[in-house]
Length: 232
Length: 386
Image (cartoon, rainbow over all chains, first blue to last red; front, top):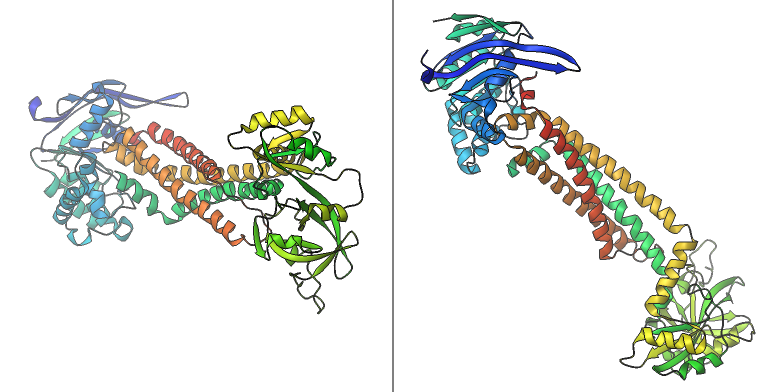
């Protein structure tokens, strides 16, 4: 694969957790490339290292060994502030538990990445409302998370992940809290709205019902990628 | 991000009110109890405050506080008058005498005898009658609190309210007649006994016969005279103690501080209030941060710096601190205002506002600091944990 078309390149990534004197190897020499415009799913049993791998890819966790380049940048060698700026500009997050701020309404939640990137609040909220309309929540911009259904909350989370036009979106179990139909709708939305040639999506999931949305599926076990399957 | 910090803080109304109430309680108890303490202590020297005119008080060198009367010979007055730098010097009698009331009971009163000619040292505010009325035969002026309460006449109906004594009524002071010619407002004394003003010569008649009856010599310095120099000169010349009004207040205040359990009792109360308030407010604020840790983690993962998070937490702490402090101080002021006509001692100087403000700030800074450490150490990867 041409390196310029790569969103993520992980080479021999090792991550070991020290849990009270006991060492647990979460990633044991992971090699993985993710291309721009690709929807990559990471699957595998609990504890196999999926979440650790997307944490490293998203730049919120440092690996102990190996190299993980995101858009050609080695995050491990970046200063703290550079890494924050890089994350703020380039990474969008979608979480299993949505992680919306309960005190903020939908528009305010979606505007967060823009405000973090230095945009003024009124402008950020205007842009957030536009993205909420794009995900079909134009009528609920002032609703608090507690006033939204699970599917609507996840759509707000997707809008939040998209609003600042990041080049990589990492999703952790985005459908596991949702029923089948809602999960399907969320995945359709992610694929239709979030994915395009200048952006990559990495989705960690256990949910076999959504495997069909992936371009490739990387199967993990015991800290290794044991198989990468092309779904197209 | 300030807007988000405020929304996060106020989003959970219960928690927000809990923190504010904790800080309100802390600042209330940090101001109300010391205000009562200061009010009580200021009563110890209220008599000196009320006698506003003289610059220097001259008394026996063994006197420890204003109520510790060790009488002087009348001749000391003339010795003081002869000292250079003294514009005038007047005698004052102050002593505890028993007044026989209309129902035959006795009430101990503070009797103050003023210079017959000038009446210097009289009550600060006359409510009825004039100070000059003391020149009338057997005339005395009583303070309003004493007149309404301890010197009051019994009600004709059993269990009824006391009838205040008024101008024209009579008392017996040491078996001698005294006619009330005026009612005055004076600052309550520490012992809360009625204060009865009369002339110096009449006071000496009321007092049990003793060789020495002069309690104080009140001195006014000549214009431009250095008071410290004059007090030293009076001491050196007469061998008596001489204090400026402020020095005499301090002497009295310190005596009560050293020799009564009041400072310790109130100190414990204030300290407990501070600890309880700090514990409630600090713990609630810390819990608030802990419960919002995932939200801070989300912000951190999305690229918010520790510095920004620190500012957000400080803003939250300052906000709840200011509101809690304002409410606490407001409640204290309201308490003081509602008690202004009661027997309760209450003094609320600006220094106390500063003290309680510093106390509440300390609580907020401590709570914020503990929370900030937690947030700074927070791994943003927490956001992916279920």
